[in-house]
Length: 230
Image (cartoon, rainbow, N blue to C red; front, side):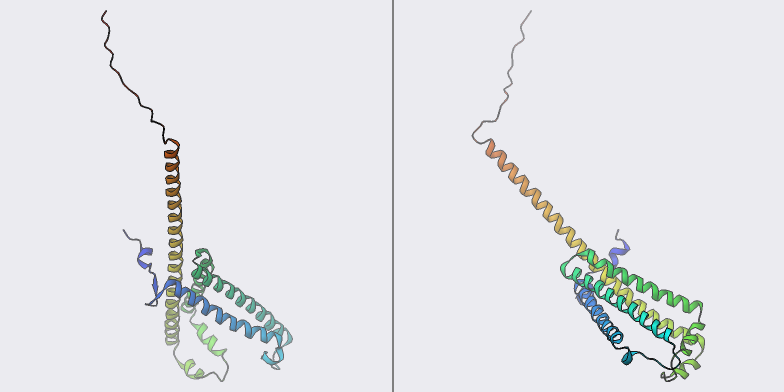
C-alpha cells in the first residue's frame, strides 16, 4: 500500500525541472533578494541623512527605533542569505542535512501567512485599520475603502490563498529534493558496504585456498568390523 507521502513524492518540479535544479534556483533567488535588501539597509545605515524618511512630527526616539529595526532587518537578511546558501550547496553537492534549515524556514513562513489569514477571518476590521494607515497619495485608496467589508475580506483571503498555495508547492519541491538526496546517499552507502563485503569475502576465500594449496584435505574413512561371537 502506497502512503500519502509517497504519492506526493516526485523528482520533478515546475513541470520540467528536477527537484535539485529547482531547489538550487530557489536558493539562489532567495540569496539575491536578501542580498539586495541587505545592501539597501546597510547603505541606509551608513548614510542616514539621505535614506531616513524623517519629518517634523517624528521624535528622536522614533529615529532610534528605526535604526534598531533596520539593524534587526539586516541581521535577518544576513541569516537568510546563509540559510539559502546552505540549501543551494546541499542540493548541488547532495548533502541532505544542509537543506533542512531552509525547509524549516519555508514551513515557518507558511505558518505565519496562515495565521494572518486566520486573523483576517476572526477580525475583519483589521483590513480597514490597515487601509487607514496608508498614505494619502496611495493609488485607489478611496475606492478600496468604499468597498464593503465582506468583499475586502474575500479579496484579501483569495490573494493570501494563492500565496499559500504557491508557498506549499515550493515546500513540496524542497522536501522532495531532500528525500531524493537522502535516498541517493543511502543507496551509495549500501552499494559501498556491499562492495566492501564482497571484496573481503573474495579476499578471504582466496587466502583460504592459498593456505590449503598442496595439502590434502583430511578424510575420514569409515570401516566395518564384524562383531565377535561369544
